[in-house]
Length: 240
Picture 1 (cartoon, one colour):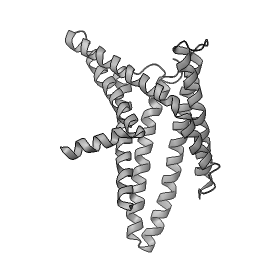
Picture 2 (cartoon, one colour; picture 1 turned 135 degrees about the horizontal axis):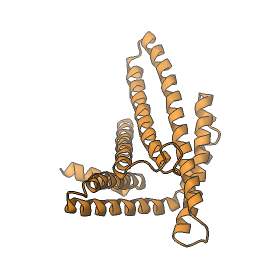
Picture 3 (cartoon, helix red, strand yellow; picture 1 turned 60 degrees about the horizontal axis):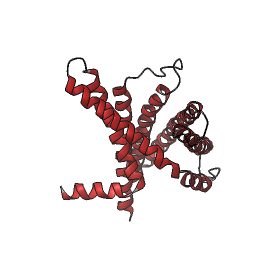
Picture 4 (cartoon, helix red, strand yellow; picture 1 turned 180 degrees about the vertical axis):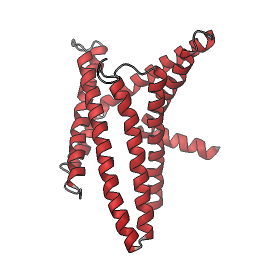
């Protein structure tokens, strides 16, 4: 019990860990709140609880939006350090990564303008800026899926090579990397489905998801993110 509490405290002390916890709670609340709201016709108490959870989810989402006001510089530092990806062995992975960094970098100012417009700090309409940020987010997710698929293909080729050479240690490591890429694809697909839902009506399934489905997809993506973060921290601990 004490170890679990200590692990949670350690997670919450880091910005990345806290954001993932808030994100999981945000979508989890939307999932439960959406399910309870569907029972509103037969259960008044469920209706009220569901409404409260949806409002709580909206506040957590707003909290994450405000916190992202300070992410531009860290994203810029990462983009500059990656550059044109000269260290990447595969050209496709390199250019997909560069395009992803561009989309991510442009996402933040678009979202900041939309937030400032909603807060009445600037006199512009927020709708188009929210649309721009959603398009950039969806583009980044789609590029991420393509990158993971390409990396999976490269890892499979390496796996076949090590199978012939009999490298057991490398075999296990490649399997672990492949599982990580599969989880990344599932996470990005869940988020991409929500991104399309937040597009204007008429674009694929834009605006058609009920609240519980948005919460389910977001919760799935968030839990995968927590699993990957825990795996990454465990690998770093093993290496040190």
